[in-house]
Image (cartoon, rainbow, N blue to C red; front, side):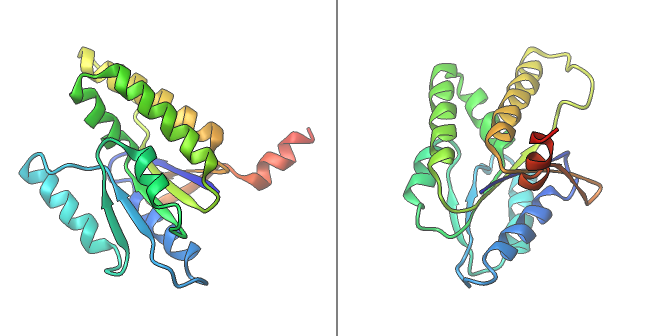
Length: 183
């Protein structure tokens, strides 16, 4: 099961994803593996990361990987649930590396690894396409790449939820997909 959780900044998407991951491990009592893509580039980001750490249970495993997510997921294949937060930070890491060819290879490897995974994974990503077209070239490239990345993830996800003002809205569900297949 791949559950993609989308939302804007401070929409409640990470809290929703953390609750979902906890619920998925409730019966097994196995810890969640939290796969974090953020890097501590400035004081504000250090504070954000600290707040995220405080919101998670202490017994969850933390894997910090800003670039090579396919490898990180493969090396944690025995984890009962992986919570991957956040795809747009991962994208920013790659865009700032100025290596588009390596990004394309890693993105394709990530999609392949997600398709192979047999256990649940919850993926958090920002929805950035609801606003105006950004003025700067890098900002436009980020918005375009984030949109394409979210579309690729949604295409393979079994569940997609958009979180707005703390309220989850189901965009795709295996239940609704089966109903729509019969129309």
